[in-house]
Length: 422
Image 1 (tube, helix red, strand yellow):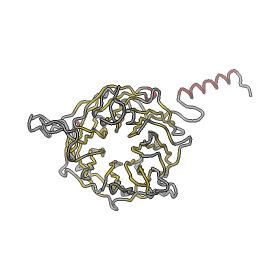
Image 2 (cartoon, rainbow, N blue to C red):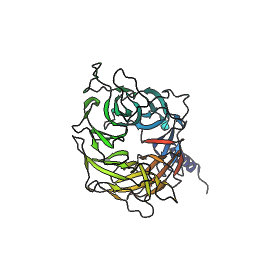
Image 3 (cartoon, one colour):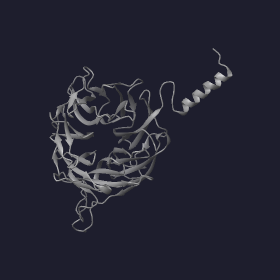
Image 4 (cartoon, rainbow, N blue to C red):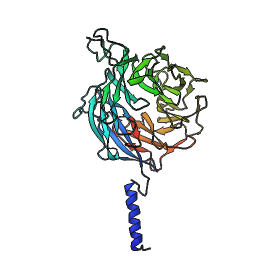
């Protein structure tokens, strides 16, 4: 069939509009960007997320330098204009060309067109071994979790402390125009030697992760399986509640996440064992930031999944997904995602999908995110890949239409997504 001249012009206009919107015959438009950290080369792999298929395609100029050594946590400022990467320091990756050097640091990046990252500057947390970060509910403050708090005034820092030491939260205010970080001093505690306000907020021993639940900040302390609760005040101030630590009830806690008024802690179980583990559900006191066990208590992981390390609550607070690094099935070793439904009480129940749940993913998942349109879930895996799954209305997961495995960067750690750049 031949098209008239007018028909050909109309067809050309349709194709032009489709290209302008980022659409192709095989997919829809770009609904967001994803950035995946990798410690092997100290890099950030960037992807565009396809609306129609969930497929990932590389952002121009990806991968980007992480700015520092051993990147482990990444945060997107609401609005999508800036991201922050926590570099733990040390590591085995190349150190040349790292503007923040090889010590622990926070790298700031601006986000340009098509999700391209441009390094801005370096910032330092107040303690050592920074391992996690999150922004507050307003997006105006950044909390950085350090595994070791600063030593007393006049005492040199010990890079290898002989016993588990207390950690800290370093609080920064975020400039809305430049993304620049400014240190927030602790107005409640003074240094006994200098008489000046200290520059951090102390937490429990060997913290590994923090979560923001409304006006509360909770840190997961793995040395004694506790949670340190802080209430969020004005100007970025954090205030310890009357109960300064809560027992998590976990044997080997690995992650803490929030969903609505609930908190879920993953427990990998007995050390040095291929344990199925469990998930412990709590509610959080709005003013006291207290942890209260939900009726029914812990729920066991779904066989044959084992060694749970991270969890995700979906955007509608209907489902909890747990990333597992191993399995109790020795004849078919794999990593997986266990899926649970959230009951009206906050208690968890195994999602009914016999023969599929738990769902297979790449080897050694570390972190997990939901895409900005709430259609897909992705895991970053230690084997340097990303696994994508489609979420049904009932919470079941299935492979993406055009393949579910995407190459990221070596020894991937955490990942983040953004749906826009305002």
